[in-house]
Image 1: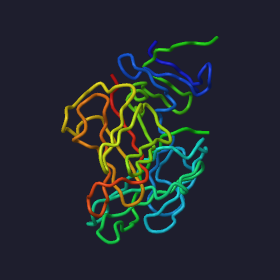
Image 2: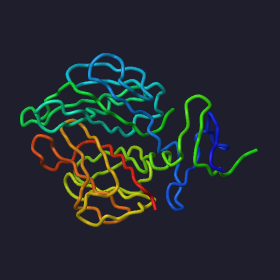
Image 3: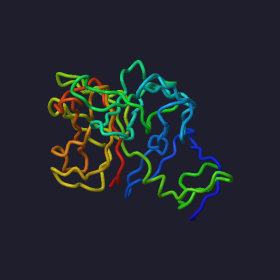
Length: 137
Length: 134
């Protein structure tokens, strides 16, 4: 069989449990390996250039953004990977997730900045790129 | 009727288009971890995929061991192993530790203070890895 026409994949035992062969014989959970969120945000406004899994963006200030999930996560322990476009002659770009209490099941915060001796991060507005892996509720 | 296994090269949605299943296999993260790197040797995880253990190597350096091994070992000192991307708390940078690789299961990670480049234990780091499992 080379092609399956289908609108939805659902596990037969548990809805989200579908196993995929990813090595010669190694298998893993399809659901666990899928990015639950990816986004491209211009650094201002409330909408995304393109995205999946997020409903809104909040511009908290220079280089400081909060993104809300379309569907909530089951816990706040998901893994975030963020980066930003380097748009000027500043130092190396750092993307960070400031604090645990700003990473919740419904939203998360990301900051972008240039490295600097003092203060250590100089926040700047730029295109923000984020992906998230973890468990949806 | 419950199906146990389907082999297919393509998945096609009625309106949203089709997807070669190689993108499912190659495009899925093979490991991810949300851990508290802390200080004083503590290294605990809050949630993860395919990580069997965590080792505190030194200040600002730790290693994640994957439960299912990678297909390739690029050799010690190389940073060309499976793709690793990370994010930490404010003022810190996460990078692959090229001095702590060389096996198909070990994934070295370093954490730096952004302003100085000095190795430092942050309070939290998040790591995502892509590549080919054995």
